[in-house]
Length: 356
Ligand SMILES: [Zn+2]
Ligand SMILES: [Zn+2]
Image 1 (cartoon, helix red, strand yellow):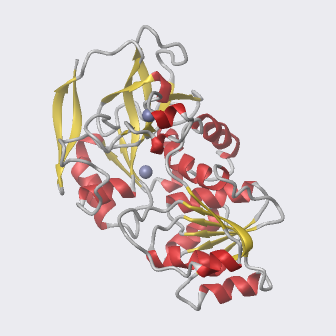
Image 2 (cartoon, rainbow, N blue to C red):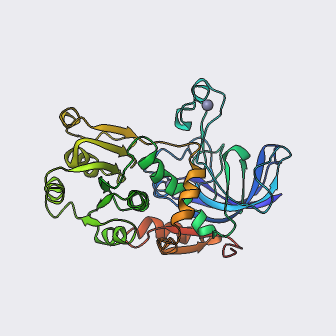
Image 3 (cartoon, helix red, strand yellow):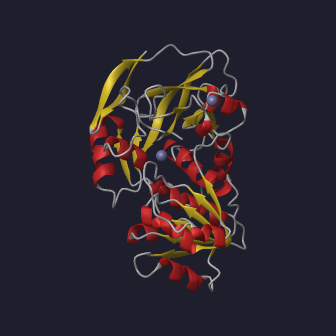
């Protein structure tokens, strides 16, 4: 079967090409795409700023924030039926290596694949994609595709808050560093736990967004030292939970300053390949609990149930500021790369996207 997929050949070289899809394996699902978000990491790979996307090995098909419909299933597949709306994991473990057998995270897998970043795991920048059943998750029929495409992003925030022991409750002050898509997810998730949520971002537009998506208080870290602003709000107690979602050097360094004693800290924002000067002594004297947050498995079903519960409380559709048809991929990438001030989420759409 022939279909169109986009291939990243190198920096600023993303081309839609016609390919012959491989034969569907017995454990695989053939998915017709409905929508696929463009992530900041896709932009960084496109611009040649990140080594995560491996076009140095071979051209690959980006897109890990996808949602589609199962249109064919292999003979062994039982949990996905033809016609189901589906989403899928991004980091794919092999289940067989020593680390997988130890029950470690997919990011520890010695043979891991990453959907939308490597030639061996094509993503959602295409009319169709193929994924194993083990990584494919059914979403409710009444979800729109452009909402389903948020599951992967929201899962990153959800794991960042709940996966490694940050576990907020109504007694906590949660400081979310960064008001981009991951930060907004963390704001909503912490808010749902009953905590007081503070979102910190230097951009006015992002602070305004955060107020609509769970933040009680927003702070501009460039206005005055952020440590002083948090101290004033908390009467010197500082934050009980800090979720670092900015990946920004100043943001990362600030977590040691704004965390209270015994605070739980989740580090979610990407800073792979950089060293960030931080005051590490504060980890000792504040007895901080810092947990990294990379790649999850077994969390999509929880994320889907959580999103289903809150989906009418927040205007997720408004987060998709720009829609482009898949064939207008160049214009979509231009928007995502060059208009970051106004583009919250750029969404690629495919025929049938509006069907609910
Ligand atoms: Zn992403
Ligand atoms: Zn493995």
